[in-house]
Length: 372
Image 1 (tube, rainbow, N blue to C red):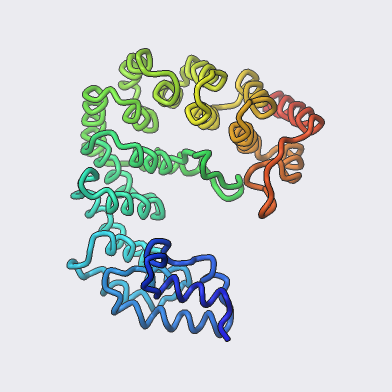
Image 2 (image 1 turned 90 degrees about the horizontal axis):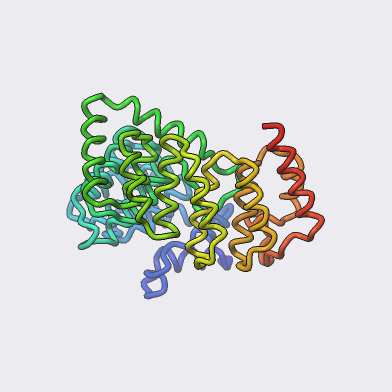
């Protein structure tokens, strides 16, 4: 008799119900399969790929199962230009996961180049999510920067661009051992510097024109990631008139990345300590995560973790401290006590650390700062 996991996988991968179509492949159930059931799942998936039309669930399952036999089948599917764009995007994603085929990347980038996010946001969204899974290469960097320049300021596009440069987002936080933002940022900036001079200058000038035309904090973020000093005066003007909260913080972080502007940290701390909605103050925590820690900012983070009226903001402040000092032995031992949000035992709820834990944390942060 099939296991519960096999039935869940089968229903989610091959079912025709509206629930199966909406929720898609049950990846957790698929990865739980073992032995004969895993082999049977592989057989069914390989059999389904050639005849699944615009349904990409079987191809996705093949990618998660790591089936090299699926590579030629997916290549054939990808060559069918009659398929819907979203189906081609996820077929390309599956092929890339199995083979690192650059042709798969090219297909997704080509679709994004001609897709209007106002008309086909679902396809646009799918393409950007797929790109996030690709290795960062010059074509990927150039293509996303071209999109930033071509379309009106788009929050989701800028979010993906920031991730490409190692930006951490506090609504999806992994343990420090699972993410290397510093290495990612260094790689992205090296790729930018190594672009052909004519390409880099063209992109730079068009991005600055876009910033001047839109005066958008989102575009300022991109100029900051690329460390464009010519953008700094305009970003300061934009920041001076920007609304308190995310717009002002985005400008501040851009300036910090360009020239280490000391005012940037002060702007973020002011927003963090304000009475703005917690969702607006969260951006200040994210910005501080990407600044070198110093006594003023760490004191604010510790105060937030200990006494902020919003529990989620307190949790995220602890997560920022964990990332900023992830090599400190004392902080590592405190983290092991499950006070950090990404270390919660399954099914448990986070509770604030006791006073003695916070005191130990403050002392550990002070020692780490003194030693840095």
